[in-house]
Amino acid sequence: MSNSIDSSRPNPSLIRSMDYSTDIPGASHWSLRMRKGTIMRLTDTQGGANVGMLFYNPENLLERYNAPDSLKCQHTFKLTQGHCLYSDMGRIFASIIEDTHGWHDTVCGNSHANHIKRWGVRDYQSNRNDWMQNGHDAFLVELAKYGLGQADLAANVNWFSQIVTDETGKMQLAPSKAAGAQLTLRFEMDTLVILHTCPHPMNQADNYPRKPVHIQLGEAEPVTTTDACLTACDENRRGFQNNALYHLGR
Image (cartoon, rainbow, N blue to C red; front, top):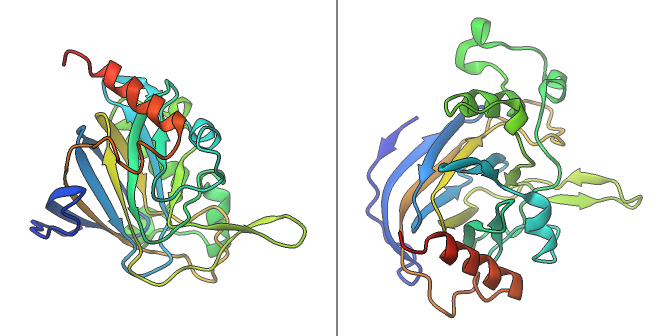
């Protein structure tokens, strides 16, 4: 991984600053506690990336991302700009304030060792950084750093992965989009982010897709009463109200 300070200011209306950036190689995992009012921008630098992501409340690790509620209350099957990511306590971990990809999956789950076997067997002991990691094991390695384990796994987001159906209704992974797709998350409460850059479970590529992602971190401008994520639906207004109650007096 390479780290650097990034002083660019790409969206002055929603983003106050971009202060830090890092590159996460393909088949890797990473985590960070994001503070309320900060942003995380992900860029698919080569095209074809998949970023599996989980969210937890660092003050109460039993509160975690709830994919069914996030889709149900916003009346959608996909995630994109304007949507919010809900916890299982009705609060909002993060809002998607920018998205050039247009469709992100949160229903197909995570890749396991059996999904990776199709590309052969490579382990870290023999192949070092050229091994083929799967999403399930990558999450478990990161979760262990916070005292969490398999029982704490929840349905995850798969950023940059679009799902389509064939004529029989069977779901499959859509072809990769061109390099450069971006999405930006604005964190509405302190959030522990766990992520990996392992393949989507439906990826049928001929070779193990070792795709990196570029991450930028910074600060957001305050949420206004006309904010697109806040006003997207009545349910989002209630989610933001739940956050306001949670932060009351702090």
